Image 1 (cartoon, rainbow, N blue to C red):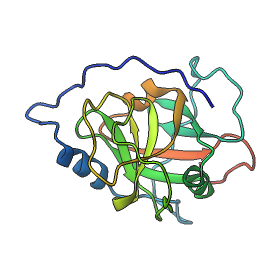
Image 2: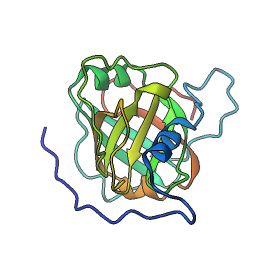
Image 3: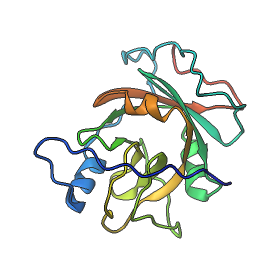
Image 4: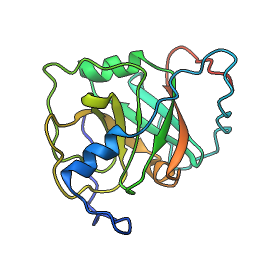
Length: 189
């Protein structure tokens, strides 16, 4: 699959925050998991899907929808064992956060086997990654501007549309991740 590369933007700094590799580790490791909604869950309902003119293409089997308070995004998953393992976990509800204004991230309910997976040390804006030490997924919506420490990230896919909805979702929110094609999901509307 080919993806269009977005031009890199200068990183936005949060007042008093220094961008150092250790902060990246903290960013990816500090969120909690909502996970699949248990029956009788009191998790807040995910808002109805708004019309989003930026989501215009027909979803493919390897696509997932991310429903966030500000709208939705479509992510094309890579054809890799790690991305397939992530897709097998769906549907999910994950609490996500963004304290540094660069990546929305949250913990998965279980680890993904990433043995033999290529590692990324310079994440790109608009891509979905997995940080194995804390079972965390992250979508970078702004250029990090420097490398992440070992063991590095594992790329799971790329945001095809709706990155602005992810960027505008705030610093703490619930995301619903579900397959775009295939069996309908029942996560309790």
